[in-house]
Length: 198
Image (cartoon, rainbow, N blue to C red):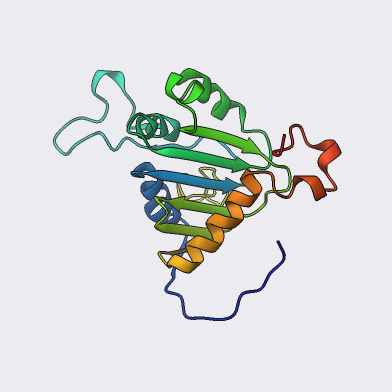
């Protein structure tokens, strides 16, 4: 998996800070076919409740103006969206608690929502509908993706693109790890909780 591709022009957008929330998280919440996330660190992410409409109170019936992004994922899965999350370390306790609370994610139709752990994953990527790509430094956390308040966010930079060749390369890279194609040669296999090729 070692490579350097030939230089070529690619249209990119540079994003930082809360730009991650606006460009990446909102795109993920609106996926129509597929959502692939690669992250080293996976934490519960609270997002604005997009269901609230202008003129309607966001806190009606005691509901907060924020909710777990996993709730939006459950809704997406209910609409047939395939969601894959490739991560390096166990998810945070709040993430796991929220996941247990949502039957659509706890017992989804085969292939609808899957998570796989690989301790060597360190790249951060989000691919929405096979047509939008984020590559950058941000883990799937509130501090990383600009969901935290000012002064509580990490200093992150990333790039988004709709370039087909770049999308194909990153999706192939993601899928190769997802399928466990690198597991047999991995020097950490003996320490891996569950090799992906098993």
